[in-house]
Image (cartoon, rainbow, N blue to C red; front, side):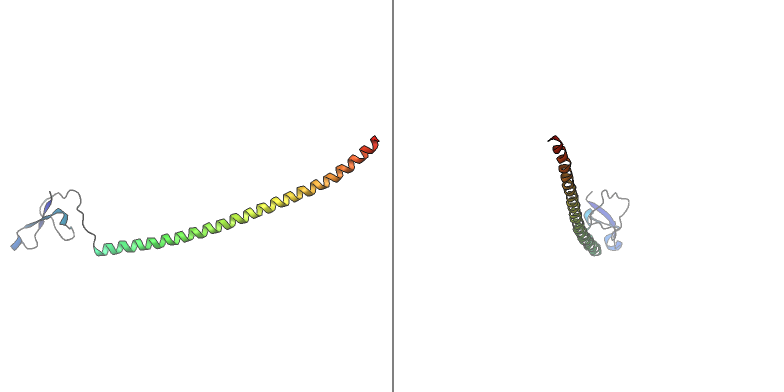
Length: 124
């Protein structure tokens, strides 16, 4: 069924119903005449108010996304700065550990050499 019967706006000149295309049916304006099956909902063009409201929602969502993008970029920058600080601290700790190990090694070497000399002297 490509047409529908709707209640006429002027029954004296139009009769009790008017036949219109199903695609032209607007439930906000038209009233179905009798018991008719609409089948699948008909598509209707959105009103200007609906379009403006949808646009406003999209603009607000764009603003929210831009703010979130900025926040994420700031957080990434802060994370990178903290990661660099931790890398520097790890390098500093490793350098201190290496220096301590080298100092301990240099103290062990003279003590070992001193302990070996009396043993060599005893052999001679």
